[in-house]
Image 1 (tube, rainbow, N blue to C red):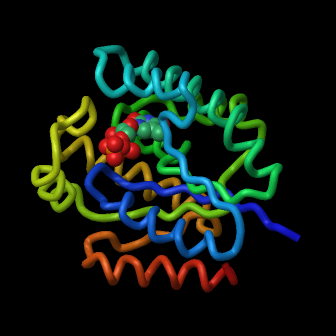
Image 2: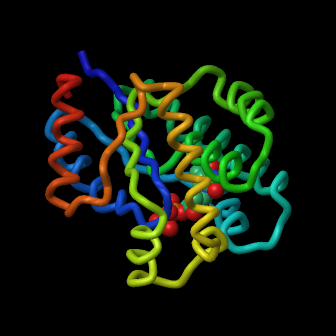
Image 3: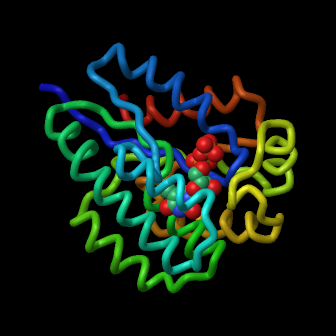
Length: 203
Ligand code: TYD
Protein backbone atom coordinates (compact mmCIF):
# COMPACT_ATOMS: atom_id res chain seq x y z
CA UNK A 1 0.00 0.00 0.00
CA UNK A 2 1.23 3.51 -0.78
CA UNK A 3 1.66 5.69 2.24
CA UNK A 4 1.36 9.39 1.60
CA UNK A 5 3.19 11.71 3.91
CA UNK A 6 2.87 15.42 4.47
CA UNK A 7 6.29 16.88 5.21
CA UNK A 8 6.89 20.59 5.82
CA UNK A 9 10.09 22.65 5.90
CA UNK A 10 10.49 25.61 8.20
CA UNK A 11 13.03 28.12 9.43
CA UNK A 12 13.91 31.80 9.28
CA UNK A 13 14.76 33.36 5.91
CA UNK A 14 18.29 32.35 4.94
CA UNK A 15 18.21 28.99 6.77
CA UNK A 16 18.91 27.21 3.45
CA UNK A 17 15.92 24.87 3.29
CA UNK A 18 15.38 25.08 -0.52
CA UNK A 19 18.49 23.04 -1.38
CA UNK A 20 17.44 20.27 0.96
CA UNK A 21 13.84 20.10 -0.25
CA UNK A 22 15.15 19.23 -3.71
CA UNK A 23 17.48 16.48 -2.49
CA UNK A 24 14.86 14.98 -0.20
CA UNK A 25 12.41 14.99 -3.10
CA UNK A 26 14.87 13.02 -5.23
CA UNK A 27 15.38 10.52 -2.40
CA UNK A 28 11.66 10.01 -1.76
CA UNK A 29 10.81 9.79 -5.46
CA UNK A 30 12.45 6.37 -5.44
CA UNK A 31 9.68 5.20 -3.07
CA UNK A 32 6.60 6.64 -4.83
CA UNK A 33 4.96 9.80 -6.16
CA UNK A 34 6.15 13.06 -4.58
CA UNK A 35 4.92 16.60 -5.03
CA UNK A 36 6.74 19.71 -3.85
CA UNK A 37 4.92 22.95 -3.23
CA UNK A 38 5.20 26.08 -1.10
CA UNK A 39 3.37 28.56 1.11
CA UNK A 40 2.12 31.13 0.80
CA UNK A 41 1.29 29.83 -2.67
CA UNK A 42 0.92 26.50 -4.42
CA UNK A 43 -2.19 27.37 -6.48
CA UNK A 44 -2.74 30.25 -8.95
CA UNK A 45 -4.95 32.10 -6.44
CA UNK A 46 -2.60 31.47 -3.51
CA UNK A 47 0.38 32.62 -5.59
CA UNK A 48 -1.45 35.91 -6.21
CA UNK A 49 -2.01 36.22 -2.47
CA UNK A 50 1.68 35.44 -1.89
CA UNK A 51 2.67 38.30 -4.18
CA UNK A 52 0.53 40.67 -2.10
CA UNK A 53 1.76 39.34 1.25
CA UNK A 54 5.40 39.64 0.23
CA UNK A 55 5.26 42.97 -1.57
CA UNK A 56 2.22 45.14 -0.65
CA UNK A 57 2.03 47.24 2.50
CA UNK A 58 -0.70 46.00 4.91
CA UNK A 59 -1.48 45.62 8.58
CA UNK A 60 -0.64 42.44 10.50
CA UNK A 61 -4.23 41.17 10.69
CA UNK A 62 -4.71 41.54 6.92
CA UNK A 63 -1.42 39.73 6.40
CA UNK A 64 -2.52 36.92 8.72
CA UNK A 65 -5.89 36.48 7.00
CA UNK A 66 -4.34 36.44 3.53
CA UNK A 67 -1.85 33.78 4.59
CA UNK A 68 -4.68 31.58 5.91
CA UNK A 69 -6.87 32.27 2.86
CA UNK A 70 -3.99 31.13 0.64
CA UNK A 71 -3.55 28.05 2.85
CA UNK A 72 -7.20 27.07 2.54
CA UNK A 73 -7.07 27.24 -1.26
CA UNK A 74 -3.84 25.25 -1.26
CA UNK A 75 -5.27 22.56 1.02
CA UNK A 76 -8.48 22.29 -1.03
CA UNK A 77 -6.95 22.16 -4.46
CA UNK A 78 -3.52 20.60 -4.01
CA UNK A 79 -2.53 19.16 -0.62
CA UNK A 80 -5.65 17.17 0.34
CA UNK A 81 -6.21 15.70 -3.17
CA UNK A 82 -2.53 14.71 -3.42
CA UNK A 83 -2.50 13.00 -0.01
CA UNK A 84 -5.77 11.24 -0.84
CA UNK A 85 -4.18 9.93 -4.05
CA UNK A 86 -1.21 8.49 -2.14
CA UNK A 87 1.26 11.23 -3.10
CA UNK A 88 3.82 12.43 -0.60
CA UNK A 89 3.65 16.21 -0.27
CA UNK A 90 6.72 18.30 0.53
CA UNK A 91 5.71 21.83 1.46
CA UNK A 92 8.14 24.74 1.81
CA UNK A 93 6.58 26.38 4.91
CA UNK A 94 3.15 25.82 6.45
CA UNK A 95 1.35 26.90 9.62
CA UNK A 96 4.40 26.79 11.88
CA UNK A 97 5.60 29.75 9.77
CA UNK A 98 2.42 31.61 10.67
CA UNK A 99 2.99 30.98 14.37
CA UNK A 100 6.63 32.01 13.99
CA UNK A 101 6.27 35.09 11.73
CA UNK A 102 2.80 36.47 12.50
CA UNK A 103 2.79 35.14 16.08
CA UNK A 104 6.43 35.45 17.20
CA UNK A 105 7.62 38.11 14.77
CA UNK A 106 4.57 40.37 14.54
CA UNK A 107 3.19 39.61 18.00
CA UNK A 108 -0.29 38.49 16.89
CA UNK A 109 -2.40 36.70 19.51
CA UNK A 110 -1.50 33.00 19.49
CA UNK A 111 -4.99 31.95 20.59
CA UNK A 112 -6.44 33.66 17.50
CA UNK A 113 -3.89 31.87 15.34
CA UNK A 114 -4.86 28.54 16.89
CA UNK A 115 -8.53 29.26 16.12
CA UNK A 116 -7.72 30.02 12.48
CA UNK A 117 -5.49 26.94 12.30
CA UNK A 118 -8.37 24.74 13.43
CA UNK A 119 -10.90 26.47 11.21
CA UNK A 120 -8.81 26.37 8.04
CA UNK A 121 -7.12 22.99 8.44
CA UNK A 122 -9.91 20.92 9.96
CA UNK A 123 -7.38 18.85 11.88
CA UNK A 124 -4.86 18.44 9.04
CA UNK A 125 -1.29 18.64 10.34
CA UNK A 126 2.05 17.70 8.78
CA UNK A 127 3.31 14.18 9.58
CA UNK A 128 6.81 15.60 9.91
CA UNK A 129 8.26 19.09 10.03
CA UNK A 130 11.94 19.71 9.45
CA UNK A 131 12.85 22.93 11.25
CA UNK A 132 16.08 24.47 9.92
CA UNK A 133 17.31 26.35 12.94
CA UNK A 134 20.17 28.83 13.09
CA UNK A 135 20.93 32.18 14.72
CA UNK A 136 19.34 35.19 13.00
CA UNK A 137 22.75 36.77 12.51
CA UNK A 138 24.12 33.89 10.42
CA UNK A 139 20.90 33.77 8.39
CA UNK A 140 21.20 37.51 7.68
CA UNK A 141 24.75 37.05 6.38
CA UNK A 142 23.55 34.29 4.04
CA UNK A 143 20.65 36.43 2.79
CA UNK A 144 22.91 39.40 2.13
CA UNK A 145 24.86 37.25 -0.30
CA UNK A 146 21.71 36.05 -2.07
CA UNK A 147 19.12 38.42 -3.60
CA UNK A 148 16.75 41.40 -3.27
CA UNK A 149 14.79 41.39 -0.01
CA UNK A 150 10.98 41.05 0.26
CA UNK A 151 8.86 42.64 3.05
CA UNK A 152 10.00 40.09 5.61
CA UNK A 153 13.64 39.90 4.62
CA UNK A 154 14.03 43.64 5.23
CA UNK A 155 13.19 43.26 8.91
CA UNK A 156 15.85 43.46 11.60
CA UNK A 157 17.69 40.83 13.61
CA UNK A 158 15.35 41.20 16.60
CA UNK A 159 12.38 40.35 14.38
CA UNK A 160 14.09 37.15 13.20
CA UNK A 161 15.11 36.19 16.72
CA UNK A 162 11.44 36.49 17.70
CA UNK A 163 10.50 34.33 14.68
CA UNK A 164 13.11 31.80 15.77
CA UNK A 165 11.70 31.78 19.31
CA UNK A 166 8.25 31.24 17.75
CA UNK A 167 9.55 28.13 16.01
CA UNK A 168 11.18 26.94 19.22
CA UNK A 169 7.86 27.25 21.06
CA UNK A 170 6.08 25.22 18.35
CA UNK A 171 8.83 22.57 18.48
CA UNK A 172 8.49 22.35 22.26
CA UNK A 173 4.73 21.88 21.94
CA UNK A 174 4.98 19.19 19.21
CA UNK A 175 8.31 17.37 19.72
CA UNK A 176 7.12 14.22 17.90
CA UNK A 177 6.25 16.12 14.74
CA UNK A 178 8.92 18.82 14.60
CA UNK A 179 12.54 17.75 14.15
CA UNK A 180 15.16 20.43 14.72
CA UNK A 181 17.94 20.50 12.16
CA UNK A 182 21.09 22.48 13.00
CA UNK A 183 21.16 24.64 9.86
CA UNK A 184 24.30 26.51 10.90
CA UNK A 185 26.35 23.46 9.81
CA UNK A 186 27.77 22.99 6.29
CA UNK A 187 25.35 21.68 3.62
CA UNK A 188 26.59 18.06 3.68
CA UNK A 189 26.15 17.88 7.45
CA UNK A 190 22.66 19.34 7.26
CA UNK A 191 21.79 16.75 4.60
CA UNK A 192 23.08 13.99 6.90
CA UNK A 193 20.90 15.23 9.75
CA UNK A 194 17.86 15.04 7.47
CA UNK A 195 18.69 11.49 6.38
CA UNK A 196 19.03 10.52 10.05
CA UNK A 197 15.57 11.93 10.85
CA UNK A 198 14.05 10.05 7.91
CA UNK A 199 15.76 6.79 8.84
CA UNK A 200 14.57 7.13 12.42
CA UNK A 201 11.05 7.01 11.03
CA UNK A 202 11.82 4.15 8.65
CA UNK A 203 11.29 6.50 5.67
P1 TYD B 1 10.25 31.97 1.63
O1 TYD B 1 9.49 30.74 1.93
O2 TYD B 1 11.51 32.18 2.39
O3 TYD B 1 10.45 31.98 0.08
P2 TYD B 1 11.72 32.45 -0.74
O4 TYD B 1 12.66 31.29 -0.61
O5 TYD B 1 11.17 32.65 -2.10
O6 TYD B 1 12.18 33.71 -0.06
O7 TYD B 1 9.39 33.32 1.77
C1 TYD B 1 8.13 33.35 2.24
C2 TYD B 1 8.01 34.44 3.27
O8 TYD B 1 6.68 34.43 3.77
C3 TYD B 1 8.93 34.25 4.46
O9 TYD B 1 9.58 35.48 4.75
C4 TYD B 1 8.02 33.91 5.59
C5 TYD B 1 6.68 34.48 5.18
N1 TYD B 1 5.55 33.70 5.71
C6 TYD B 1 4.79 34.22 6.75
O10 TYD B 1 5.07 35.32 7.22
N2 TYD B 1 3.73 33.51 7.23
C7 TYD B 1 3.38 32.30 6.73
O11 TYD B 1 2.42 31.68 7.21
C8 TYD B 1 4.16 31.76 5.66
C9 TYD B 1 3.81 30.43 5.06
C10 TYD B 1 5.24 32.50 5.18
